[in-house]
Structure formats: structure tokens, C-alpha cells
Image (cartoon, rainbow, N blue to C red; front, side):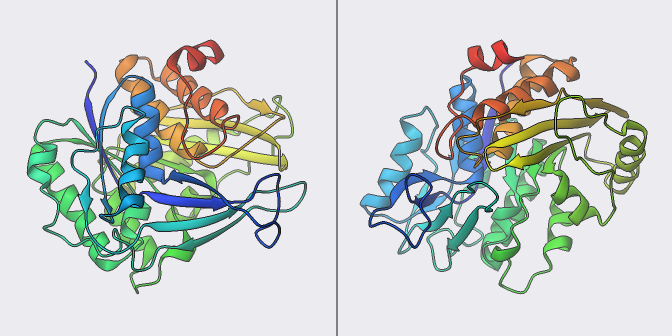
Length: 337
């Protein structure tokens, strides 16, 4: 049965320059809406799942345009709150050659930043849902936003929802005094499924793992070492039953080697290594991983290897799609699987 999924986070307006121009070059910015939890919602809706997105947006033309961008892609936005003065934004300079990408956030004082516990009717929203998806970003913006996130987790627990969590550690967002590692560990202790990239896993858990240094698809994973690493992690956070770790090695800005590991029910599974020589836009690849597995664990019950391969295929296709949203269809993903 296809579940009803609720995602919660901040919807952003992304500014960037065309043709790999730096932020300091050119006269025009292109604009796209996005944000981790919204990206997950769009991916799920594109795959045919029933998904609602919860956020707070300014009650003006920009805020309503942001919500409409999701509505047009099949996401239920009836629970979006309107208020506050502005939408959160970020500026993205893509990588080129050996030059790294650059992200500059401008989110302080946004409508979501000013979100407070009690504003969102979580009991009504979650009553008929089966899954709640949150990420570390929801707790990084402000203390009030963090409190609202834990409020949602409390009610999800009361109603018996399956909770998915993306680490999404963004160092530059944690400015209000909270300890990011301890806050994210509190969130993880309340979740049933977690996603993160290899660097985020290692940072949050403060444990070294075998390096992923693939330069082609023949790279051999150190599965015994990874298995021991995940076992220790599961002992620390026993509620979490599924752990998905995305792994990316960048040979160059447009040439990536992508794979993933899934630890579930005491078994460690590995996906193939995907050699992607023509990356167009890597933003949102982690969200594509998350949405791909969330969709697949219900589409292919009992077949965790197929679910893992599906998640990797979804993330692989996202690398070829411009913008934050993964608009890959189930047919396209299954063809790659």
C-alpha cells in the first residue's frame, strides 16, 4: 500500500548565474525554488506517491509562487502557513574544473526562521499519514524552528508514524547557540530511517570509516569494516532500522562516482558504483537518494537490494537534471535499475 508522506522544512529561492559564471560576474541571476524537504516531496509526487509539504512562507506574491511551484508538480500544499516578511534564499555558484562549488545562505529573519511551536496543527496534519520526513536543516535555522521540529516528532511518535531523517548538516546555518551534533543525535534517536552522505555520517558519529576513493566502477568496497562500523552505530541508536549512506567521489566537477550502502535488519547491502561523466547539477542528489528509498521500500516490500538500487538510480538521474528538484519518472529510474 502506498503511504501518505508528510515532509517538513523551509522552501527557498535559489539564485545562480548561467554558464558557470561566478557570483561576481554577469548582470543576471536565474531563480529556482528548492530546499531539501521540498525536493523530497517533489520526487515522491513525481513517482506517484501521496505527499504533503509543510512550511511557512510570506503572504505575498513570492510566497504564493513558491507554493505554486510545488502544487504544479503534484505536491499537496494545503498545510502551508503564510506569514512573516520574506522567503529564505541562497546563492549557488556551481563547481567548474577543479574549482569547488560555493553556497551562501540568506535565511535569517525568514518566515520559516520565525516559525514557533504551536503554529502548525500537527495532530490534524499527521492523523492520516504514515510517514513524517524531516532533516537536520529544520533544526538548524533557529531555536524556535528546532522546537517546532521536535514538536512534530513528539506528535508523530504519539500517532505511531514511521519517521525518516536526513542528517543534512550545514555548518554555516548553526548560529543560534545550539550544539549541532547533540541536536542531530536527539533527532536521530527519534527516527526509523536515516540518510546521510559519508562525510555527514562520520562527522555526527565521530567515528572514522574506510575511505571511498573510487576513480572507476571497479573500486572494491571494504564491506567487513563498514559492517562493523554500522553495527556499532545501530547499537547507539537502536530505534533506527534502516541506514542509507550515499557516497560520492568527484574526479572532476562534472565527473562523479556515486554509490550507496544500506544497513537494514543487521545486514549490509551495497549498490553498484555509477560512473557519471557528465554531471549537470548535483544539488539535491541526497534528497533524490532519500525519496528514492522511501518510495522503493513500499513499492518493493521485502526486497531491500532492489530498493537500494532504485535509490541509487534515482540519485544518478538527478545529476543530469538542472535545478533542485528531481523530475525523474519511475520509468526512467527503473530503466537504469
